[in-house]
Length: 372
Image (cartoon, rainbow, N blue to C red):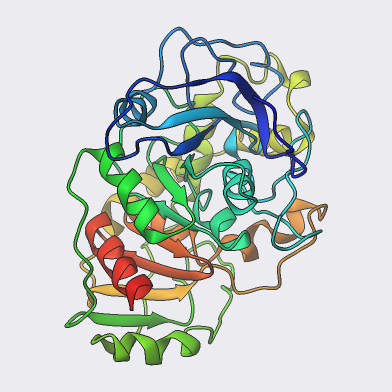
């Protein structure tokens, strides 16, 4: 297959797209699989030099499911190396360019999926989200992306970053498209649109993550509050309480464990950004990891006070595509990453972020929002 990929969105285009069924809920829809997800017989690099020539023998279950549902897989999408980063840059496969905000970041790490969908190169994408990686690129490229509830979609055959936070999620141009793909990925019925009667909590700040960092704030929710009310929801101010201790040592501990077979033994084959992160992850203390797991388990008992939270995905100006990630990583993702720590669902509709404990809630609200 040949295409004009002016956005460098794809690592591998397939000369012969993968197709299995001529009918089904995704019949004929073209789809890109993030190159973190195994596809049998197709090079799957994980965005790395280490696995540049890796060809899996088996496909991940999510790939099998979309093929059974009639989707046509046209290639493997570009991504941040090993999916650990918030910018659409990769030292081995190049920067993904934003079709709707030229010169500005696509966000990461499912950057190729978002750019390809926004640029009309495919209909749908399967991405992954460990800290923001479906929703941030969706917001940056003005498409739709769902971070699924932890455990809702199988992650077998997906290169792990942090198993306590890793999720697979659908991406598309509309909530309708994302809901259809979600139904196939998780094997559950697509929800009916629903906002009327729900209580929507407006978040003007993300929760502090007990790491001593002052969080960003935003009044962007004001532009959406009136429409929620027009659609029958009750709108209130809301806040999420912080965890009892910082969960971040868990992230570092699990990332180090995921790469133990190749890092530090093959550190020279890693790009500078992820090498620095993994170097730091080697030094996390066991006591901090223990406290982090305890804090995480305690925080995941949180019962929300509203049916649905609404916030912006991003509260800062979109940075240039070549900005040093260290300058923007935390402020760019602060309204997103807390959702992974709780294990909840988050739906990005452009920069609108809908959050609830379950996929069905955010999808139903998103469908109602889209249909009006």
